[in-house]
Length: 445
Image 1 (cartoon, one colour):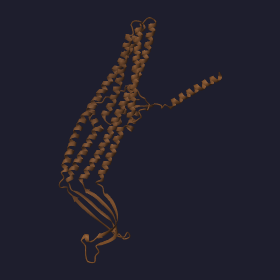
Image 2 (image 1 turned 135 degrees about the horizontal axis):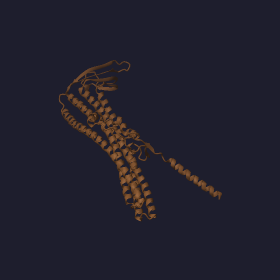
Image 3 (image 1 turned 30 degrees about the vertical axis):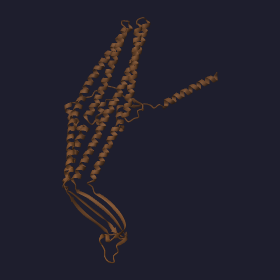
Image 4 (image 1 turned 135 degrees about the vertical axis):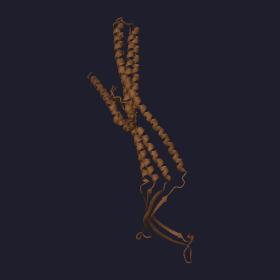
């Protein structure tokens, strides 16, 4: 008997230990605030990383173009061993050999070239500078857009979490009402139909809870993917949907400020300046170019006795005919016309973004107020319906109807909170310099 008891105790201990080890192997969920999510997105998101390489590429292009204005220096070393056919060169005389050699000589030389006047290269370099500035602005715009997208995905996850909480609370309520229906039936105050109706509502709420959990997990997968994390990384939201008051700006006064702050709009303006420099470079193809080049080195047949030699010369070149320039000019003018149209459209788009963000912010704030009042009324309606059913005044149809009304009110409030939070982030995006100001629109965690 004692041996059996000892074996049972040992088996239980092993099972507990194995369960403890299994739990220890499960990674703890990573708690994420909205600021954490944005920080990870700015570090890992593919769009940010690709845009960063485009800045490096533009910087490299600018440096290459600038090198055309700098001195170019190279060196050559040569050792030659050869024969010469004098008759092939037209040299022949009685007693002279036809072929001389072999003989050797050495030549060590430095070559240098410097452009003195080259307006085409100068304006091409200035265009490269503008393109680099535009690439940096595009990079900043990408970061601002990633902040907007990361916040949107985090809010989607918050919305999913709130739906899960609401669905689980409905299940608890339905379980309570099912028990009430059974008790009322046992006391002869309700019919079997009332019990079945309560059970059907409970089954429906459980199904909705399963759907809500699945949607929440799907939202977390999308968030992890955008943040550059493995989709299998367990995440836990450290924040929940809350209402935060934000001062609504005056649209008419902030549109111009937004135009000056939005990186996407400023990038287009810089690209237009780059095209202007490219047009100047195209016109400069017919201007004279002045350069100086020369070389210096040592030449001789004996390494111990090699006198220095060299030369320096200036070159003035003028292009007299170049049909390619007309085609290039037409290309630049077409690109400039297209860019001007994009700039005008972008200005209208920024104003639209501003007006929509302000409109949404005001509207969603009112929606939150209305839905909270409706939620309080729906909760009161359910309480009254429960009391009427408990007292045998009516069947539980009123209870089920009140449950549906409460669920709808809960969903409306959650949706209003999510839309208001999204409107705050959209306003930060519309104003420009999102990376600098977005924390003011997130609210306290």
